[in-house]
Image 1 (cartoon, helix red, strand yellow):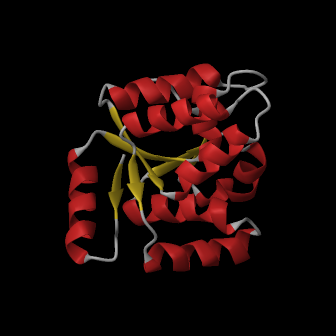
Image 2: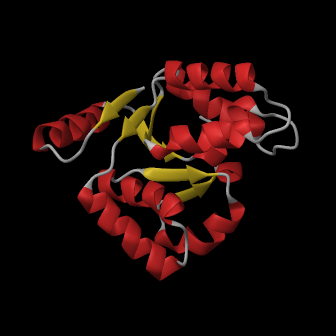
Image 3: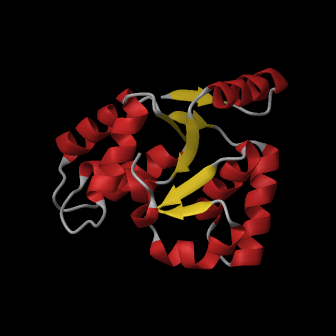
Length: 165
């Protein structure tokens, strides 16, 4: 995974160039990534796996705020089916996928705060939506409760509705 700090204009330009030159870009959240590692009691694993394969084959470009790594690690660490070694293997696998991770940027944080208050969602959830808005990409989530609160924003896809290319 490559970190991209957006406070520096040069890095902002680089990120926007990468997105412009890449195939279709999607912001994904931890609810999607969890399905790559934890299959039991999970819906839409095949769709999530397809996203991963498409990204690895460079047919699509996946990007996320850097909080993704912490959220995925935390979810797996609290999963009774995972021990320390399995969590560490998942972390390694996540990094090997080369998802573009974006560090906090003031404009994205301001938009996140705005979304938090207008949609009554967590800052953690709103940061993904704000990033998608900033880079003019679609946001994919498997979180149905979140989707119901924000679907009117228009750039959000519920994982189960993602059309596998």
